[in-house]
Image 1: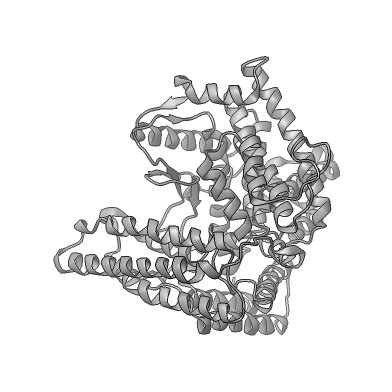
Image 2: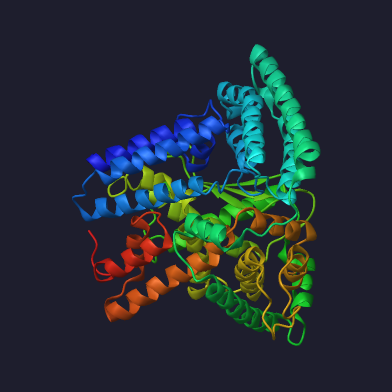
Length: 559
C-alpha cells in the first residue's frame, strides 16, 4: 500500500527511530538496537525540528481515500501535540518516574537481555553508549535549570533511586554466555555504565535535589496539555473530576456486592485479606505459576477465537514469563518483523513466596487476550489499511490502548469469564476501583481541587500528596505501601496519563452501545471488534468520531 502519505509516514518513522532509539525500542521499531537516545538539548531540538518538517509536508500532501484521511488525522494529531509540548517547554525538566529517560534507558537495555540468545554486539553497543547518554541528559537538566526549570523534588529523588536500582541489574547481566573477548568487553562496559549511573545519581541527589521545588501540582494549562498528549481529547476537568467520584462510588458498591457473595456480612477489606491467605488461591512455585499463566492465556485464546474475535494465527500464542522484579505486570507487543513474539512479563520479586492468583485473571485479560496482545498484535499485522506509523504508534496513544485493556476486562465479565466470585472481586477491587481513584487523584492533585462534601474523606480539604496516599490506602487496600507511594509519584510526574484507563474504557463502551442501538438485531459484536481494532491507534476524540461515522458499515458485513 504505497501512497505519498504512507511514504511520508514511513520516512517519519525511520527518522524518529534514528533520533530516539529508546522510543523506537518501546514502539517495536527494528534497526536501532545498537544505539541509545541522545538526550542533549541539541538532540531534543532535532526531534522537534523533525516534527515541524513532517507537519509541513503533511499539510502539503493530499489524501485520496478514507484510509488516508484517517492516517493523516492520526499523524497530524501526534505532530501538533509534540510541537505544542515543545513550545510550552513541557518536558524541559525531563524527569518523571514512569517513562522518563532513565526508565527508557533501563527498558532499552533490558529488551536485549535474552539470556543465551542475547545479541551481545547490540548489548555491548548500548552499554558503551550509556555514559554519553547520561552526559547529554545532565546537560539538558542543567540547561533547564538555567531557565528556572527544575523537576519537582520527588521526581528528582525517585530517578536517583532508579539509577541506583539499575546498577545491580547491569552487574548481573548473563555475560557468561558470551564468548571470550566479548565477555570481557561486556563486563568492562557494564562496569563503566554503572560508574556513570552512580555519578548521575549523585548529581541528582546532591546537586539538583536541593534546588528542586517541593510543589508538585502543574495547574490547568499544563494539565490540559497532558490530557491532549495521553488521551487525544479535550476535557472539562472539573466535570471529569465529579464523574470520577461518581464512578468510584459505583464501583465500590459493586465491589461490596461481590464481596458479600463470598463472605456475607464481612467488610470488604476482611474478605480481601482472607482471599490473600486462602491456599486455594495460591501457587507456591514460580515455575508452576508461569505454567498456570501460560495455560490461562492459551485457553482464553482458544475460547475467543472465532466467537467474539478473529485472532490471526501469529497471535494465537503469547509468551508468558516471570521476572524477579517489582512493579506491575506488563505486555510487550511483537516486533514489526515478528521476530519477537508478544510477551507478557509477570513480576515475582520472591519466587519462593506463595503467589495469590485470585486477582490474576483480570490482569491477564487486560494484558493478553482480548486485551493488549490482541489489540497491539492486530495493529502490528495490519499492513493492508494502516501505514507504518499507525502500526507502531500504540504506545503513543494510552487512552486508546489502556482504555481497550480495561474494556477487555469488562467484556470478559459480560461474557461470563469471572464465574469464580473471587476472580470477579479481583477484577473490581484490584483494577476497576484503582482506575476510578486515579481520575479523582490525578485531576485533584494537579489542580489542587477540594474534596467534595459528603465523601466522608476530609470533606472540603484540598488534595495533597499525603492525603492522596491515605486515600489510596483506604480505597485500594490490595496494594502495599510501596505501590501506593509509587502511584502518587507517578501521577505527579506525568499529568493526565492516569486518566487513560477509565476515560478510554468509557469511550470504547459508549461507542459499542451506540453501535448496538443504531444497528439493532443486525449488531454483530465480533464484527464491531474487528472494525474497531482495524482502525488502529488514535486519540479518543478521533476514535469516537470514526466509530460513530462507520457504525452502520462496521457491524454488518466487512470484506
